[in-house]
Length: 117
Image: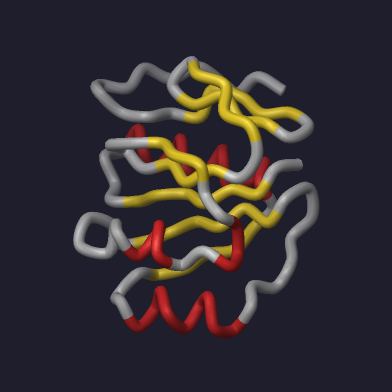
């Protein structure tokens, strides 16, 4: 699926997604990814809190896309991030991509951790 095109100045928008991949800033990335306005990288999934924690001083909210369907996060995952001062919002990955792009275009301090659909 291709997402609505918005112009960003020096940011990492999510251009699209499909089975097992995300297109971030024109680059195809396989598997789970963590995307912020400054970078995009492979993410280790819900067992990996270290990668999003590295953004704790730069973001207010982390959107977590749980794949094709919304799912509950492991309690420990949410607790660790919230204790670091990061708000956590859970949704399915397509909704997380759209929400991230809208807030990115507004200059908000956000990131998104995505499991593939």
